[in-house]
Structure formats: structure tokens, C-alpha cells
Length: 254
Image (tube, rainbow, N blue to C red; front, side):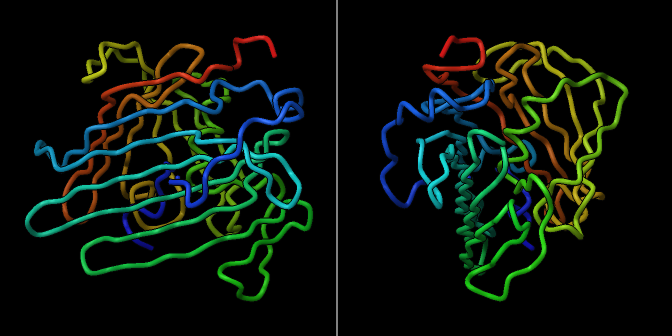
């Protein structure tokens, strides 16, 4: 598992997004994100600006005749000794917030890897690149969809929340510790934030030893304002540069 494979974070369309279908808008859960939302980030290794990142809900799409939000996360940049161009996609069922599909296109240094996970909540099971089916969990989530899911959860400072929803069972539980409240300044502006520390039983940004911290805006949108993590080759930091809200959100009437 590479440093970025646990991010989310997580996730660029390989096919054109489909227009919203009325049935999706009528039945989708009330959440603080929707099609059209886009967040752009400055990426730094330590204090050096090395690239850009983005996080977007690119469209409604059907996966096995089930309506989903198609989300995309991308990190691109590098230094003279290390280059990254990673793209992650998730398809999140609009009625259950379960992940139905997850794609990774990872280019880090000399490593180049692509893989696709088909996830079946009803069985529950998953298939990686056509390999034999493996057991999963109820209401499964992948790395990217976890970042959207956590935006829907009430969070209280000082508490640790455990979720057995990661689609690969041996990596559960995913722990979310709510550390503190903080007022921060990022390129997009100044915000009141709530700081959380995610932990997954794996290598990478959200590993148990990585001690990554994520700042979420303390308002109904709960957008990711910044992220800081420690990796083997240094610290990876993301800072919000711009935010385009969706036309329809949890605070809107559908």
C-alpha cells in the first residue's frame, strides 16, 4: 500500500458524468455535499509548495442499477527527487452512503499501479480486478467515501468514534478521534474548524503511526480545510485554496 492509497481522501472521472436524474434527487439522503461541489488545495511537502489537489463530486451515476455520487480525489506534484500523480474515485450509493466501486490510479516515484474494487454491500463482498470474491462488511466504505461519510456524523471534542465499515474487514475498526476546536487561516480564508485524527490499520497517511490530522469547517458544510500528516519521506500537507458549493445540499429543500 502506497502513502496516498489510504487517503482519501479520498477520488477523476474516466467517463463523462451523467446529468442528475429526478429519481436520485428525490431519494438521496440529506447530506452536506452534492454534485457540483469542488474543493481545490495547495499541496506542500513540509513548507515547500509542490503541487495541487482537488476533491469533487462530479456527477450522479448508476452502478449496477443503483444511484450513486461519483466522487474524485486527485493529488499532483512533487520535488526533484519524488513525483506524485494520484487519482482516486469512489461511487457512493445515494440512499445508504455505502461504497459500490472504488478505483485507484497511483503514480508515485517509480511506482505505477491501477486497480478497481467492485463492492457488493448486500452479500457483503468485494472483488479486486476480477480476482476471486472476498468477504466485506455491512454498509462498506472505501478511503475516499469515508471522508464524505464523516462529514455527516455529529462530532464531540474529546470523543473517539469507531466504525466497522471499511470494506476490507481486516482494517477495521476505523477510529476517528476528535481532538479540539481551532480557528485557522488557509488560502481560501479564515474558518472555525474542528480537528479530527483518523486511524486505519494500514500503511500510509491514515495509518495508526501516521498521526494525520484533518481540519473540518465547523458549519453545516463540514468541508476539509486542511490536512497534515507525517510520512516516511516527510510531511504531506493540504491547504484549501477555493471552494465551490453544490447547488443542492443538506440545507436545501429537495
